[in-house]
Image 1 (cartoon, rainbow, N blue to C red):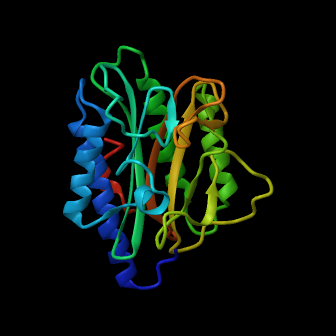
Image 2 (tube, one colour; image 1 turned 90 degrees about the vertical axis):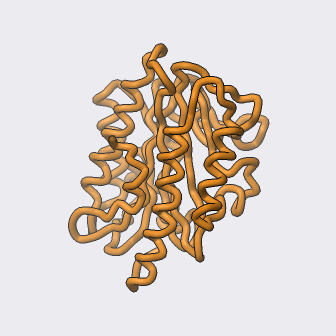
Length: 254
């Protein structure tokens, strides 16, 4: 969407705070031995307290309030009772929701407990690259140039990007124009960021794979060549200067 009046900005701020605080509290609540379902139910209760509705459940009938991907799961992981969180797991939580007709999206990967499998460098790379990408976004910047920045920075750090997972417009629904804010440069994409545009910018940084494939459960995605993937995401409003980071309360950069 494009923000055209103060009430729309206020609506986006309200739902963005809801998903951001939910993400932050879920990350803090996650403990070794807990099931992904327990963590998801906790997140679902927080969303309810805000009066917000889970976007993946509302839009797609997803079997969970939030997406929780663990270790080699790249995205859209089902928060099942069989998924038990362990020391050193690479965990990704993606929280998106709707409130009073406004939608917002955010996510973040982290290492649970001690980094015994040495995932932290990948997590840090994803966070740093998202920070750089968002810092470059303003009115008139080519969307493809942000994709180029993300891919270039990933390669500098020895990583790849997942090419078929991307950021997107958001606001009046979960996915809007621009539909694909890719993690690499698409020379055919001549779209530019416009003032007051609301977008969800996300990184998908990978150790081995450049594409994600869907498993038999029809939801969970993993890298086509294995390895691990980290994701970090903020919903922002584009301005003539620094973007307004609507989901800053998730504290993924802390």
